[in-house]
Length: 363
Image 1: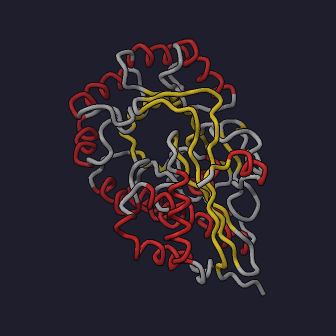
Image 2: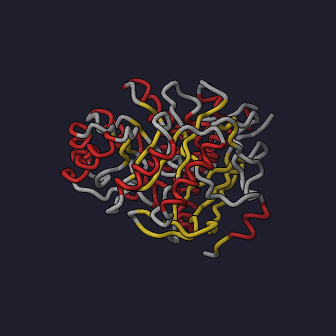
């Protein structure tokens, strides 16, 4: 009989290079800052999770935090009780779990726990969580400020050639309307456009942009105002004819509950590496189900498809190829606009030993 008591936790910081520099209203990036977590059991399966963001060098700090603060809290517990383990790690660390590095570390650790549990059960993680579908639609994500108008359209068309029916592009420049018009003219009225402001507007500015986007049939206006002010987001949602999307910078079920209760967003976008891991993502998904909102995700489709695919409110996952080819043990290919959820125990998004050696960061 397998003993699923946690015997150890490893955390590795990785610096994953991007194929080319990219830029948004938040900044310019040349790499992905990533922390990979492995949870080991006494004689059962191990599990893996990760958290990541564009640019920066916080991955080493996240790894240290996991090693020194979170790992001691869960070693000796069983992956058969992920909810209890989550509270063992979160409870004594509430002061550091308001967001940021603390929440990122907990998210990656929790995802690894659920991966180990699913592997033990011999089930895909999506199946364990509800298994609503086995293929998840994706939308193409890009449209960076570094792209010329021609490159913008070409990128969108490359996504469309894969059967993808929606494309997200960055706004927050003096050329927002020109770029939007160029995309609409190139792609036609039936293709879905999504605009991401990366928190760059005031309420007044965001409402005006929402009115402009509505003229072009844009599906959503993402993070139009600073993410910390749900009041401002709710005001934009109330006044803008373009629906709002938010959640990549919301933490835990409580942050999303406020967004839901205020009707501040029509699309919820939890980041599996920030929102509190699988334990919290499933509660956020339940909120979306109950409120009749659309559930999407922020980046990392490799993990997110197993979560979004578990809920009837699941709309689509963000698709951006930020993890280098061959860095994971399996590929996540888009076929006819969707990705098939791995039909294997766990979530299937595991870094290869070679990638971990090549991209590891000392700390």
